[in-house]
Image 1 (cartoon, rainbow, N blue to C red):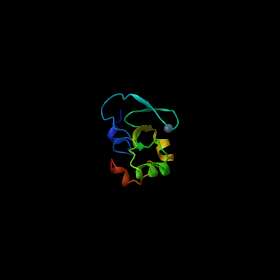
Image 2: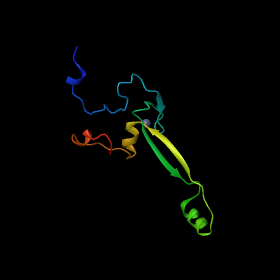
Image 3: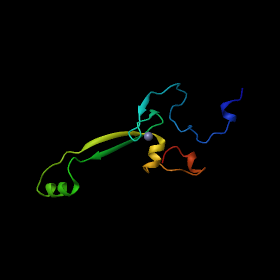
Image 4: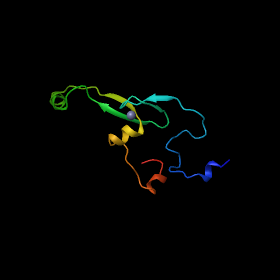
Length: 99
Ligand SMILES: [Zn+2]
């Protein structure tokens, strides 16, 4: 049997954050609805305003406070690349885990 270390590895963490853990629970991608492992999914947190930005500017000027809500979304790698959240990286860039 060939050791894992001898095989070609594209990424240090194999594109996941699982480590030696055997299994990671699945989450649903908010882009395509596909199921992805939680450690592989790309998690994006954004603050959204329920009011139209133009109207919000007007309301703030008049002293209104508009509460912002945070939205957490999970994306699969394919959807994250498509939406421009992640992009392809060169061989050297891939060695960095975070960017
Ligand atoms: Zn997706």
